[in-house]
Image 1 (tube, rainbow, N blue to C red):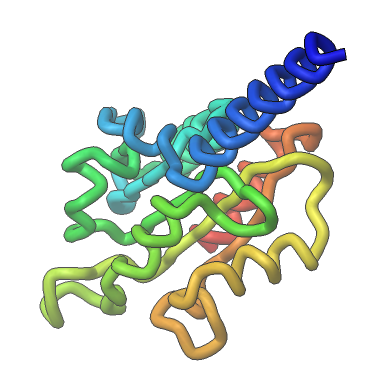
Image 2: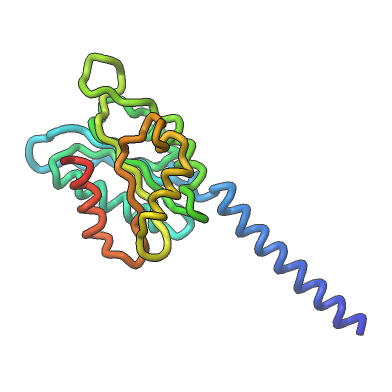
Length: 197
């Protein structure tokens, strides 16, 4: 009887460790610390502006796939695009961009902590150059997660970031959630079209 009790306690301890470790990975946003690289995509014709796409890859890498597709679509719309991990030096410099897109995974209805921090610290852009160092006029925010997107998902994302609230500095941002089972090409293209038009 004691042996069975010890086995049950050992199994319970292992389960607690596994669940605790998984929770720590999500809540401490460990995946964001791997997002230190950047790349630049140049359009084939004349550029209409510069765009910055900042991402947290998340645990599954789905958000990185969304960021890649958004960057390609912006390039197809004649933007010079810098795609940068949230912890990269390129992500820290938001000057000279007419479009800034930021996104990452959605956990329990909220964007990852690294993306929330980035958005809450993103300075407000100015409509035209010459009024300050920040000239971006359009901001897009995407979340990636399970299932199809509902308005409730978008509201939860907005509510999780104070800068996106009704009185926040980014209240005019275009916000979407793109589910893993949705058509990424169509959803990303629609998102980019909303940002650039």
